[in-house]
Image (cartoon, rainbow, N blue to C red; front, side, top):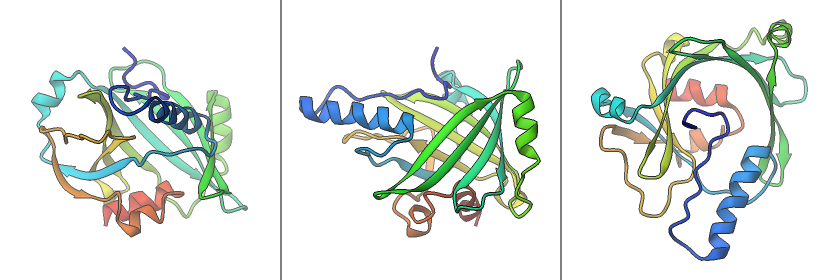
Length: 206
């Protein structure tokens, strides 16, 4: 029932010492609050040949995302997001700011917006950055929580599908109903733009 929630995290509890389990929990709490803390390494792939029948059997949550990037003067990344359920229902709106480095991490804050606040922030849109539209499907597979994104715009990214898992455990099994085209997690061009989701999208499209 919680699949698709903005702040859903799955903490692996089957392996490791008590201290390791606590570290995983602290990692999730810090990630949710947008503050520095111990971090597990997330994984990203570009994927292809999705077995839609097998994926549908997992009953993934599905919604449309539309990111608009805003002008900033301090080097931070600011964006507003419209989240719409594929099955209908009212949209929700969010504002995320990824700010300055704190240690080796970026501080992040996110809040839910009213429609009026969303429209007001759209007036500060950065004309140098294109709008990003994608469909996200979230699902659970072997106690891991995945997000599968298919991009629709900008045109250069259309058709690109990426897979994200927050913190895979040691004995990680790639979902067999997806074909991994490339693991981009350790690619320098990807990790070096970790603070800039717009840059990541443009690079994935290339």
